[in-house]
Length: 468
Image (cartoon, rainbow, N blue to C red; front, side):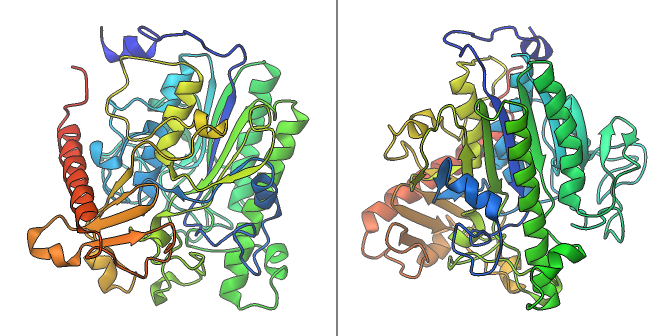
């Protein structure tokens, strides 16, 4: 039996599946920092709709992106696996392998309508014409969303300006809708609105057909080039031009989240919809090359590209009225890698097409108030951040392990053992006090776990997880 037969439904267990499978929406901002929301205490930024989500569902106070940069995190959200298992180590490096089993592919076997809207960044979208950094004739990284389980697409390979997204692009890219097809109209103004204009008809079509849906809505805001329209800039008229654009494009994104929530209510499907929201990594740095970026890590150490908290701890929300009937916050560490195992566990879904191991865990017990601690830690690996540090972007060691209280960072190099770091995140979220000398046994244990994790990822990347 080959993989395509698996994806057609062979070997899938339907035991204990819910009578009404929930709709699932994964929303993600691009470079929005932990502190870039009203509900996390930003003194100026207006995010009333995200604040309303935080007050209605689960607010994750320790939610982590799968990586400190965009492409790896996005892969983790769709596969439940660490990006070093399938070769996407950094932005614009590698592509999503066909052997990986995405959440879209899984849900299609259960009759879901599937759609991707916004930034893809997991491979190129065309072999025909030059597009983005890597797309075009001769590309070796072709991996569009329609080959990974998505029926409806409105997708760019990479970032576009947050206002008038098709104008003045650093690298010319398009919103692709299928093989050889890209959008040519309704591409002016706020990029978040442009994306939501395509997502809303998809939701309406599925809801009216009484079909469950899976929608991935990945905004470009507030990634550079950072631009906002006049109306949103005027909301921040007392600030600098750079701040007007940065705050304005996030408020514009927030308005589209409000539009989405209202649409779900109007369609009568809000109660049975899991609406997730997160960012793909921490805020961009304040190096002069970053122009209008004014992101806040909310007092956390580090920023994008760093494995310090500011690079990987991000806003995290879930609204699901039928299951989460009263709002609450949790300090249990959770991750974008938890999306897939959570949804599949709720659906009692099993398939031999699923590569193992998964790095995420199902969060159903947490949603029901029955999980006080994470049963196993979250591991991180990125490329050596020395180059980023040299550019003034707050680098960190390239591997980290986070459990319910402690965080260990290391190069896993005996010659650099003196640079190992251990923090008590529960009382020191700013990572100011290295306690590696105070708790040497814990540091050794966490270091051994990191070594095992790194070797496991090396085996995975060599193909050990895939059924032949």
